[in-house]
Length: 289
Image 1 (tube, rainbow, N blue to C red):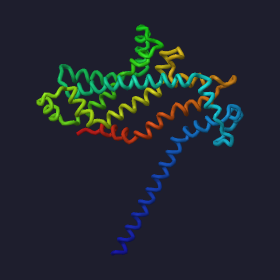
Image 2 (cartoon, rainbow, N blue to C red):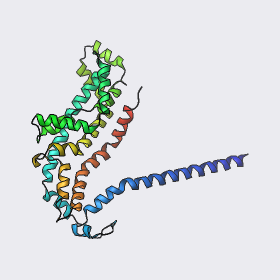
Image 3 (cartoon, rainbow, N blue to C red):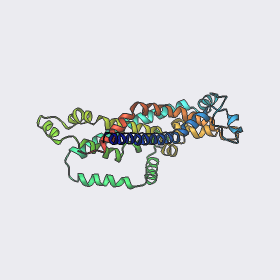
């Protein structure tokens, strides 16, 4: 009997080890697929322009790396200025959006006013409208207002997000309403209750929204490309195409890749630092009760 039990334990351990090895193999394979574009981007950025164009068959390594492309990325276009513009756009847009989103989520989750459910349902229905239609409407509005090639024209269409309002509203509603009623009995204002109670409790989700919005603004391409044709207001996304076209009669892909590496570094650092917060915030937003 003991021998049979030991045999079953060995088989169980062998099966577990096999499944573990299989899972790790699949994860490694998937990691290679996901990370390969980043490796290719970095590899291309350290190849010389001549060496890259001389490759009839792509080479997966180089014996003569160079930083020439990084120098050209900053000299072919005013990339430093584009960085400054992008930082201004990202910081201002994110701060304004957080104010709008947090206050809206608080209103829909705690305040009582006529037509609240209907208005919130209407907001959610707007998520079904294709982004292309919204961009066209925003472009006409901003153009008619004379805000093309200005920071307000870049920023205003991005200062709210229905999805983030919904995410925070669901998170705020997890806080017991008895706390709110007790705070009101003590004479606490709505803003003070929001600042002292709800925001600290829901900090993981708020940090998640903050980081995701920063990434969204940093990667913005279509709207900045559409609403600006003055280099004084170009973002880093606008500069990449200019760098690509700076080759000697051909596309300068290595210099463009170098610019993409430089542009991607801040986002990679942010994600590596806050990835646990992002996962925690998303899981809290998707759990009710």
